[in-house]
Length: 316
Image (cartoon, rainbow, N blue to C red; front, side, top):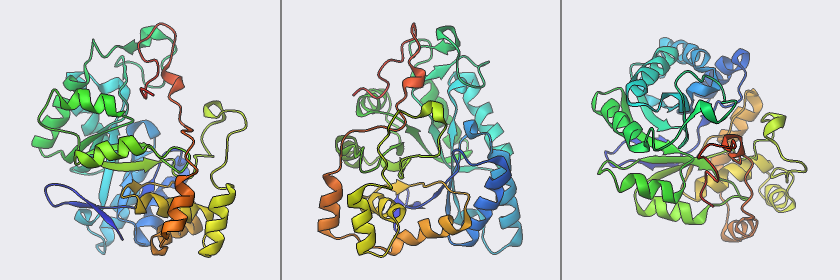
């Protein structure tokens, strides 16, 4: 399994199990199945609403003794309603309590967006938001640094940050993000962002690598293009006697990023990890490179409420 290395020598498996949209009744089995079949990287977030169930799987697997805590990389994310200085570490401690862990391997600021602390779901109007003038990202980031110094997390980073937002944050601190988790797939290859992150020793994790076809209908556009049905991807899959999903996962890995496909289906969980055995050649990679169309499945438009300051969140 290819791994992403961090400055202190720690390493993270490039292929992890995503848990966004994983039903509470299924995610415990999914995490257990994943770990028992070779996964050593689990991606979580407080807002997914299933960290307690993920924690149950971790306790069960670690309790058997064959897989130790130190062998599994666990990532979680700070939700938007806990950006204020006094809320960051309590939110992290709640995640640790739910996951039944003493520390996280990686903790990310989920979005460069701040909600008022009492907003548990999504805001209904502009009054439910806090602007980045009211709660600057550096305020949140400094608490992430404190959490790392206190031993609650080993590594810290961000998610859904554009190059511009990374640059602004990095200009205010010597402690730069170690990870940026963003939407990335052949229709949204983000070459400039990837190059910037690589140049600045920021690792990248690709989410929605298969096109996130199972996300809620209200987050979908009409007539969305399907990655899994793309003729080029299907042709390459046939060539390698693989599934389209496996090709998409391997493409991310060969670009040097981590990737976190989500599934609660045992066959698919195993199949996703087996994509590591595929080797795409230069022709395959060139054909896939030509598919880039700057198409986002997760547009961020749900944050663009009239009267707030979160317009064009990706700066593109």
